[in-house]
Length: 215
Image 1 (cartoon, rainbow, N blue to C red):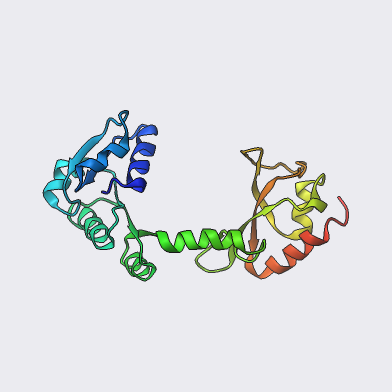
Image 2: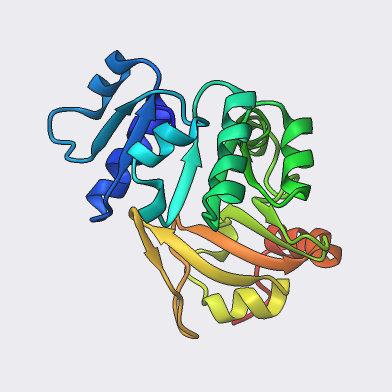
């Protein structure tokens, strides 16, 4: 539900992955965002209306995304899809972070776009290590993205992991993701995706800045 910039991009992305897609929007002009190559179903109406959902084929759906511009519309549509039609995979976009937390506790997966965007900007403003890309719910494990420190270029990923106590889950190199082996060498401009314990993060960054003692 919702054929704005997010909804239309999501619909095309799903279709590109060979999924069958139906798009609902109250404004028929919005469907032009889908482009001429879109082969899915277009339904004009409100996505929280059971008749509209039925017309869109909700009974055959494996998932439902409510990504209109209105929080209330999104959450009502998400609840109707889940509670009335039994759709297990339901996601609602919510602008208000406080509301998003409430509905998350009710079992509806939410994407709090304002908080997510602010977090993304924050991570790029603050120094490396100040804010992780991800923390597990217990706050024990964190995932950080770090540009390969100059001192470590030319050294093995094994040595890096042993001396920093941070595991390299994968690295981005020349636009591609790479899974390092024991003898992989860190190269200039590698983006390292590090998994570490929260309590060891400060020591890990100190060891990264200090550089390798030996390989």
